[in-house]
Length: 113
Length: 403
Image 1 (cartoon, rainbow over the protein chains, first blue to last red):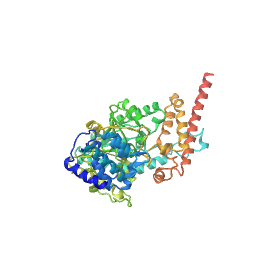
Image 2: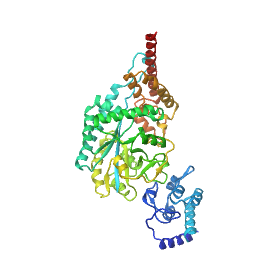
Image 3: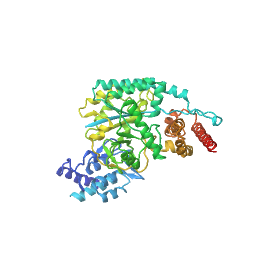
Image 4: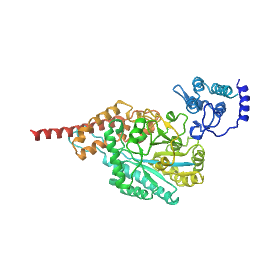
């Protein structure tokens, strides 16, 4: 699944180059710096694609710093900035970075292809 | 563009002596003058004088491009006047440069906001008057004691007319947000919220001399590289720390003075870096979003809450009993009695009563002049009981006069 989604993601990237843009519902465009995700390991994420990419290599320390029994910063970001309520709700139940990555990629595929 | 904003906290409490139960009713002097004198003289020599000289040199060297801000408590200023007037003079010299902003806070470095808004406003006014008297400064930025902040306090401060307020950039509040932007508290419409970047602040304040830290030793080049990386990802960097970091918490032998001496030059090599005071940062940047701090957040300990001052029953009892006396003490209009009572409102007395000897034990132990938190509690409650005794004596006198 991940492999297939990644292939399509490459296609998405090719067709819709990563550029600066305003925040709009379901956007895969990069959001401005002031609403980018500020991760504890120092990385900055500006789009859902970047988040999906980053989750691949993210350490458990970083992931579980942002995802605890009382909070899920990734889901909060998706809800607050991208206004993707359904995806954010699903992400709350992800439990691992790989499952969260698949959720995001599936969402992007369904939304944009 | 990243505006680097240094805020240094300058505070010294008026420490209590081991005021015993046998002193109550006989001796109304609660404070450990000898110890307070020794501490002020020691810290003046190790920190305040050399650091003020360094800051003045840097301000002159960069011709207005290097700016800093201070929050100096009234209790610190009073003790400088008594024990080290040259320290006060050196702060006045810094004030004259025009590159230094003085922030507003409670005169006695108290947690009065939590117990009495009336006392809080009075202490803030006292502090403002003190800033005007010594530095001809009119503050527009507020920082509460120990950066204690929540939504309600934000609104209260906005209503007092301030343009900006400082708070801790705690992870559990920020979530996915960066501390390197200007925000607005959820309950406010106008005031700007500047959040401490605790990672970069603590690299200097706490980790600088820690040889087991992965990034030890910290060079100006390495630190500047971390700050330069904020360009494009933030508008401002708020470095908030105790002034005593320089020479007292980090001894001069650690190289802290040398680090600070070369830091501005290294940072200004990047064309997009600049130094700004908190009020300049607030004025020049729009808020990018609102921050919701429903519960109180502070800059203390790992918990970033109020538990350092109100985490156990001794602390809660002492605080409650103190504020119960507020109205009665103020009704006397006795300046000495009111001043004695207010000196007891200083948050440090409650910090010394902290029994969290786990993750932050070392920090608490370092600052605590007592052998144990219980010793502080006993001295504090005895002093408070003497204040009650002084009030009783006054009442009896008035009754006798009326009769």
